[in-house]
Picture (cartoon, rainbow, N blue to C red):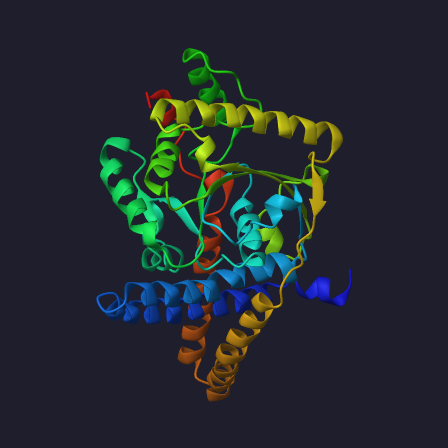
Length: 376
């Protein structure tokens, strides 16, 4: 193990990275709060500023993937599709099998210039998660309780507000509703059998309400749907903790572009289109498991330096006063002050670990264990 690889495994460095992320995030959230005063004056200026503020936070996580763990991401698609990336509004459909699938999506957003303006249909609980949920609130992210009768009006209103968004955006949908687990898959396939739908091997039964509503509300704004099927070489199952420890992974993403005009206008037709899409995604995963690659031409978009420079800037601003403060605490010789500081370090460690825990599959929601048993 080289010196750099050894340093990446050290808990103290993890704490410092977490400190920079948390404190910079709180600063960014405060600035976002101040930008609310711009909304009545210039809604578009408010949006552009918040896209850049969000980029300054999200890019720190992307930096961990790209520069800390040096994880590589390969696209399997065609040249015509690549040339459209970052130049049109799009809905992204991504399989939800891995703890860092969102991070792989974000790194592609970053490389094509839409990280700050990326959107997602998120569960309501995330709104109350510090930094993540708060930043999303200022970005006009659509939150839902995943109870359609209660969510319908909120989702429709939130999506329609995005019709005049000034920056190109990628709107991420996890149509499966929750992360894949064997238990959820078994229950999901029981529902599929009861509804006469084809059995899926690698995915949960897609929930169609969110997709059909998004397509309906964003017509005239969104130009295409990008279907993204993600897997990792070597049958790896990466985690955010693994990324933090500097583990390198190789992510492969098969991307297919569908013009929104090719998706049926009516809800039933759009739902059938989505079910067919997931059957095709399942076939792509089968090909990957057999051959180790997806079909299509391979592209490796180069990582950009901005994520690293952004993190180094925040680290320079925040760590210098931190080190001065720590030296002052221990130089004081006060047991009470030193114990208070160590208690703060322990609390900060716990907080960072809880933030990481949001991504862990085993701590995911129970949504799917019960909800798949209910009629959509």
